[in-house]
Length: 521
Ligand SMILES: [Zn+2]
Picture 1 (cartoon, rainbow, N blue to C red):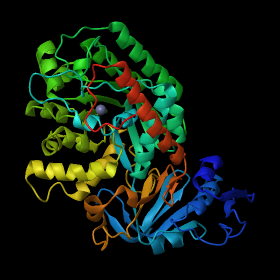
Picture 2 (picture 1 turned 135 degrees about the vertical axis):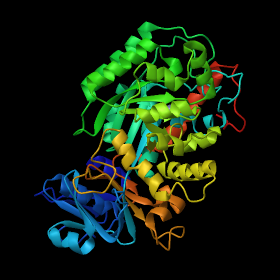
Picture 3 (picture 1 turned 60 degrees about the vertical axis):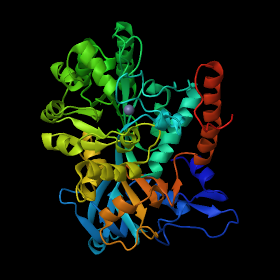
Picture 4 (picture 1 turned 60 degrees about the horizontal axis):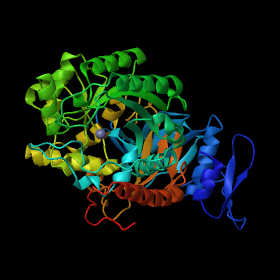
């Protein structure tokens, strides 16, 4: 976090360095009410004090303890500790237990009162495209047909082209929403990630960035036209992946990692899929792909390759346990079985699936051996919504009012996502794990009485209940304020630039139909 960023977020406050062991504090503009870490323990509801905590901790050896909270660990036994505490040193959790025990073990720690709060692992969003925030309110209602004749692409409107500066704003906008909904790790699948990789690193969030490859010369996912290969296109994509990995993999103390992506089975030739798989092995990293996303894709692969999309990938050796397959909605049981045998992770993008009117068969995929994780996909980055929608959709699909349990869905969205992203020491509040966590205010009209905290939050919680987010032991949101991004500026810019971009599109393409209810530009 930079001081200038914090300063913008806490209006009327001044930053004062007091020297020595990273101690510093904020004073208000009147010069009174100083906060001093030596004198009292901060509460979570204070953004000013929050910065003090981070500054002190980043100075070196300080242990932070959040105590008096309901701790939902998401460990192997779904342990919940009421009146619990979590101790953090540097980027790691060092202790989880009762408040009494943890405070006794670390008598000199910086203490933060967590009474009335819950501490949970942060969410892992394993499938998103941040710049698609540009299509909010438009693409959600333009899904492709599920029956022939299939149309090309996922929406009848193209996404307006963006200048690099504009692209960066929409990616930052997506991260703002992600942090506010408790997300600590994101798999971003996109093209041209180099343009905004440094902005992503500056957000403080953990990322797996997967640069995308394809080599279909014309058309998009679900396009029924014949497959015409553009080998040069595929090679340029592979070169971009390699360059991004060489330059950026492991930056920000390993918080930024680079993976590989093939766009979708009907967008890639067999040669390219083999190349992407070979590159995955060479770089020793995670791969991702959109799989069985829409019925048009299934029809296109059947027509070109004479088999189903998952069979196509399996025959090429593309399926592996470090692959995250997004969607898996339009899938035959024999494909689900192959995915499970290869121990592929399925990204259950529940909210976009609900909007498209189709759900994957999660119980069956899990039963065959797939790991289930969760993603937002287009337009939204709200993992609280994704968790609840996933529970609702799967209960409706199974016609079962008890399963999946809230604990199961919470696990999909936390520790399973971390494991899928190649972070085995994350996603659960366990000593030794990465200190990626969220603090939830439970004193809310829609949450009390708090009797079973995981069920309570999965069924009733809202993003706005999340008041603090920590990644790698560093607060990136605290007291309801995002400390790493200038939220006010980004929101205002996104509104202005979004209108401009769509106006440019409609003015240059008079053939396009402007959606009903579109804001006048
Ligand atoms: Zn996607």
